[in-house]
Length: 311
Image 1 (tube, rainbow, N blue to C red):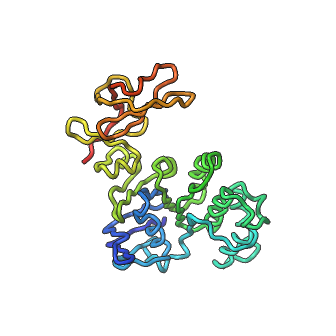
Image 2: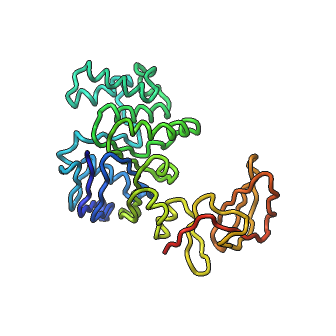
Image 3: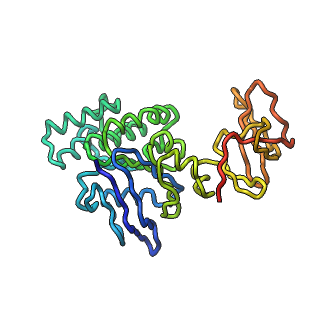
């Protein structure tokens, strides 16, 4: 049971605050997504947990211990794969032998992780001869084979092509769950966060804007920036700001009617995508192929099946 706590943490770089977190609790044995735009401080948060950086103020606790003394409790899969110019198997074994495993145990654990990620056939291949998707799996396998109580994943889906991305997105929750670790996943993609995590932390400019179970955060975004990071469209309805989840807008009349103007209609084979403007805000509406789409320039009325008021 290894939880993570930030207490009065402040981290500065080049004279500015990169992170300022008075309090944050990442719960044990759960998967927490750190979600936010580029430059929000997401990777720095991981580096503080892994004790690769140290806070200028406050402390980061991993399982009750200062992060510096809990290094062996943490494994980290970097956004950019970092491997030595050796075979894939040797790269995985190296991390295990450094942590005290003998070569026989290291080989067994490394091969088990490669099999789990379905890349055991590449074990003897040099790492500079594998594909980007294989490299992402290899990086995850290296982190998993350490059996660390805390697993940190920095943008684990970044740079993958369509089919590899879809497959790993399906498989990753099971792989992380199989590890039994407290997992922290950095992403800027809300769909990934919802698919992979139990809890969500929203970071903006180095500060926590929302944190909690994913359903609680998703159904109570409170603030415009949080809603937009979650992928919601924010529009003004009778003087109130309303956040609408992706896919919740329809052409059918409903309890919330919004006047919009059609900008363009895209034929995406299986349905129509209507791109329209509500004042200065551009929105997307999916229309079944069986229905006739509106014409460009037409005024239309929209309804929102789901909406949240924000400030």
